[in-house]
Image 1 (cartoon, rainbow, N blue to C red):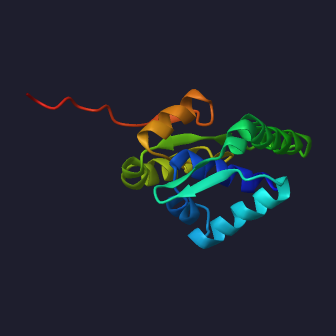
Image 2: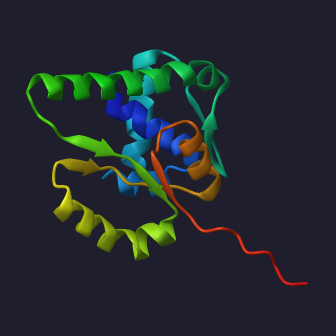
Length: 154
C-alpha cells in the first residue's frame, strides 16, 4: 500500500471533494477516483461514500481513519530517519493557508524563505478554514496563515 495514496485519500476526505485535491496532486478527478478504488481494493473495504455533494468517509473508513493517519505519519517518520542515516540535514516545514493567501501572499514568501533556508523543504497545504484549523490542531501543519473574520457592522 502506497502512503501517498493514503495521504491523498485523507486530503480528499478532509476537503469533502476530489476535484481540488486531484489537481493539487497531479491527477484528474477520474484518475484520483481510480486511485481511491485501488486503495479500497487493496484493503478490501469501502473507505469513502460518493454523493452529489462530494465524498465522505464510510463507516469502515471512519473506523480505519486513525490507522490511516498513523500509517502516513509513520511513513513520514521513516523517511526522516532514513534521511538522517544518509546524513541529509533537510528539514520539512508544513504551513497551511487559505487558497487566497496561498495564491496571493505565499509565492513571494516561499521564494524568499527558500533562498534563505535552502535546506528546509516546504510542503504548503491549501485548505478551507475549517480544515485548516483542524489540520493545525492535529499537528499536520506546523504554521497557519489565515485571516481573522471581521464582524459585520450593524
